[in-house]
Length: 202
Ligand code: TYD
Image (cartoon, rainbow, N blue to C red; front, side):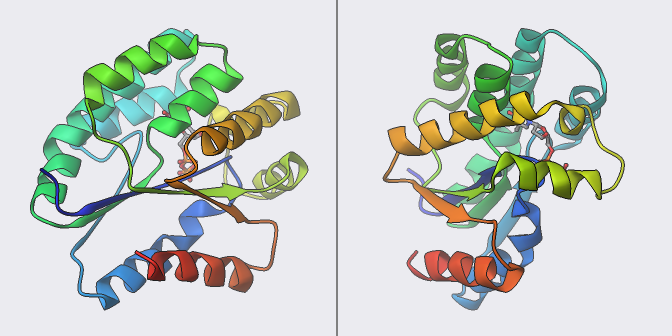
């Protein structure tokens, strides 16, 4: 039995989700919750080593999927599940929806294979809330062009990003009770206000 809440942040590279992490942490802490802020791929010592490989080495899309779930298995076991069990709020910058969007939606890994790994690795663990930061592909690519040196995902084409966005929006449509879509193509202050409103309903 878990007593805490599991919140995930999703969106294309350049959607700006990471910018809002401090706001979310502060809002949850103000309500008296313990907050564990983490990310995928990563979140553990092994996971961060796998992240280095995943973000910079070219590999088969299924290898990438398997490594994402290997890192996730470790992440759940040593960070997410224990935190939820003691009543903490876990905030993860990306989780399994990213595998559906990137490895399946954009790179063509059969969704049923991702589902299989999801069932194996997560059993019945699902986020309670997923904030999807949504921006048009041109905006995301424009933001990335002015950002720090890109990783391998960030160097992909507009078609690749279009498939990611579509896959995320489809995930949101299929899981309406846990997804909130945030229009992130607005002034930072407006996006922040939307984020705070959603968090205040928890
Ligand atoms: P990201 O979360 O955007 O971190 P940063 O802000 O430091 O760039 O980078 C993680 C990358 O990993 C991102 O391009 C998406 C990718 N990714 C997948 O392809 N599949 C996954 O399952 C996860 C968790 C991430």
